[in-house]
Length: 142
Image (cartoon, rainbow, N blue to C red):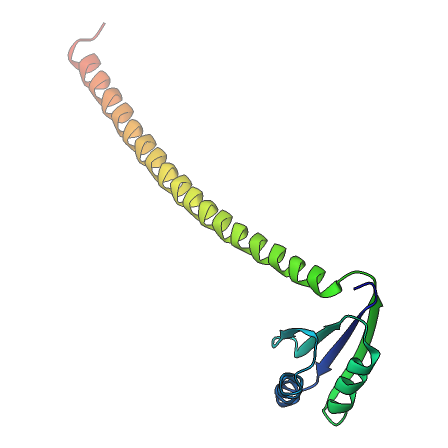
């Protein structure tokens, strides 16, 4: 697989994307397919057989879409899929981190509340001690 040919088909509409995908799947072509419905894109990877890629191009010719061809010695499709897996893993890790941050924020808010409650209580106790000291001083002057 030295001469790998990648062809990206990008449809302008969802109907064009669906038609493009049906055409490629119905054609029984000897290619790897990566379909991205969100971006209305289909990437086909062939082992370099130009006749196969020409057949695909002919069958998709009347469909509302744009074709971009990329040639390379490595499997770009596998690199794309690997990158997508990395993105998915990072997304899961970010979700876990968000949960941890939310829990830490809840703990922070709870401790802040307790701190302020204890400060208020200490302030009341200090006020009571001052009141008792004033009372004691008025009963037993120096």
